[in-house]
Amino acid sequence: MFVLEYKVKPKPRQIEAINEAIRTTQFVRNKVLRYWMDNRGVGKVELFRYNTRLRKEFNFVNDLNSHACQAAVERTLRAITRFYENCQNNVKGKKGYPQFKKHSRSVEYKVSGWKLSDDKRHITFTDKKGIGQLKLIGSRDINYYQPEQIKRVRIINRADGYYVQFCIKLDPRDTIKPLNPSKQATGIDVGLKFFLVDAQGNQVDCPQLYRQSEKQLNRLNKRKSKKYRKGQKQSRNYHKARQGYAKKHLRVSRQREEFVKSVALRLIQSNDLVVCEDLNIRGMVKNHRLAKSITDAGWATFRRWLEYFGEKYGKLVIAVPPHNTSQNCSNCGQKVEKSLSTRTHVCPNCGYIDCRDRNAAINILQKGLSMVGRTKSQASGDLSSSCVGEILLNYGESVNEESPRL
Image (tube, helix red, strand yellow):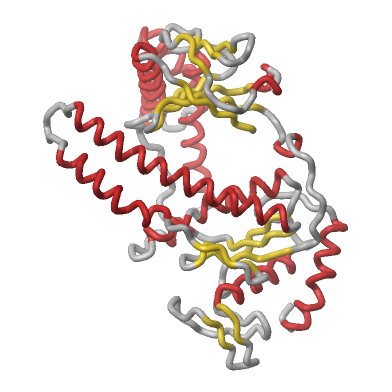
């Protein structure tokens, strides 16, 4: 699925209509979830039938497009299905029991309830909520896609305004020209001192975007807290301060997204095989001393973009277990215990000395190369067998020579 996003600037009357549509979506989702809780064992058909009953019972639900109500039910179904899957797979910790929504920020339409203008620069929402026509502001041209390719349309409320998203059914590999094979492979070790170090020794510094903006965020948060009145209706100045605080957070998250996107794209364009660690980030952030730094680094977002670009450009991305990648010697395979503060790998067995992160990246690459041809990648991407063979020829001799374990 390919997503195009446009900024819109609705009028005050339209803002009220959009917010009402979002609240209606939240109401439908919560009512359907309550029905599932009270009638455990009901299936998909019963939930959609209950949605139909809600439309007959409440006029404000009937005013929303029927497909938008169905999309709200589908969100509930996804939460319920994910909960059951986590229980069946014995996922550690909380299983993700579905929760009621308190602050929804989007409403989703399917193939009805909206209409594009002839020049495709305006969109009109045709249900009874009264949103009306909105001008699409953005550089991406939707004229390249057929109307039947648009499967979903979302209106999203963010801190800096409202956006309209078009979800287009399209293979990302059809939108670009395939890259020529680079006949290169690399392993990457992500960290907090350096964002990543690859097997060739290249380093990318960690930008620490949240740390750099932390003083400004604290100042904005303090300003917001001073204007908060417990048990009373909040003033307009409070909402202004709250919006300024949210905008700053949104700016930091967008900077982080653009940073990891550019790093992931460069890696995919310069390598045919990229091996990374399959990190349990959810468990790692439970360490209260490192949680803020790990979240600021954006490892999960980086891996998601790495897998996306790998699939888009036809490159192979493999996620390998991270066990002992930092401890084992990449030259002889001997385990060398070291703490996080030890930044240099010194092997007492063979005398090999290297940067701790580069040593880990080489171990990650070795694990990935041992998996190629034996099992399908845990991540995504396609690579021809001839390319894999050439990569193995380039790296296989040195790996076997340096590490007798493989």
